[in-house]
Length: 436
Image 1 (cartoon, helix red, strand yellow):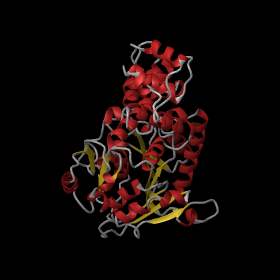
Image 2 (spheres, one colour):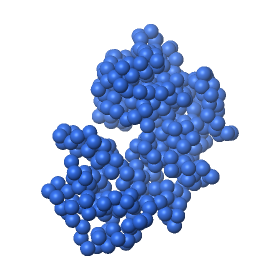
Image 3 (cartoon, rainbow, N blue to C red):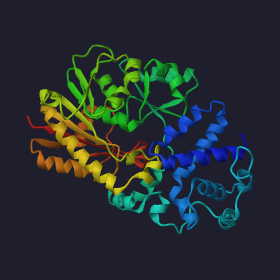
Image 4 (cartoon, rainbow, N blue to C red):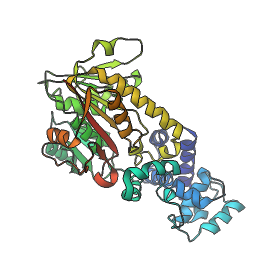
């Protein structure tokens, strides 16, 4: 593909991402799947342009000022601010964008010689946040706010979880190396590998045999903090596609069939639970994990009240901790949606709590960095549930990750993982014990 054709493809995809609510990854992936003829270099260039614009959206719009803010003008501004040749990318060729009009040429003249980062930008623009979100996150991070938000706007690595019930990390690492995929050990998770470069892991033998699964290191840590042991009954209350479910199954010993424990995965939508079908089959766990669709009309929760040693609530949230992977979500999030999610999180906690047996634990987690979804939800829950008490995360970490030192959380009883401090997605974890 010529440069202009790549540019036209990026403009098209950015327009689709703006107009639709689907994740950008899904839109880009579907476009490539329908165009198998597009070569690997072209795919990489188009993807880099699309995500480069998404990660610079606020700064590009600041540079555009009163000019039209569309996928076309944003791509044009990005090219010019990088020092690229606008005319070569907007040449009117059969598969390229139309030539520049007079107002666009004027925009090129204004932006030529300027840089994407400008010291005159407001702080929230510099770190690619809507102002209202910046105001909520500044108190969370204080002096490290700018560094944290800058890290949150960088591309994320690809992490793998090794199914330790079937192979060791070294064995998985060697198997991947034979296929030309280099990995490093994750520094915090004892069951993780980090790829040196993104790749199609689905084509590897290690993945097809269920020896590895794609899972961020922070998510792996959360699965370990559940503290699942071979004889326990564990509930993954908001299981979704089952990434953490499979990790917990490995800790329970279900993989090798030596466990007397029980693992149940629930969700409010059957379609979400069905998304783990292929994963369960690869991991040879299809008949070892019970699944149930929760509804207001069945009695499942009543029938199983007080029966689980561990209940994990990985609550629906804004996903602010995953913005490295989904930068488009920052623009889509509204204060109204945040309020809806906060109410949902409180409801989920209240509904899950009765399922914990006396002496058992309720683990609340989000992939968010906002206090409204994290500390504030836990504090509100504890105030209305005196039969639960918060356990210091340092204590829980020492019990469950014995050979790994707990990151410094200061005096906070919660775990907050961030891209800047820990190299993971953003995660929040609180562990509460039900009084016995």
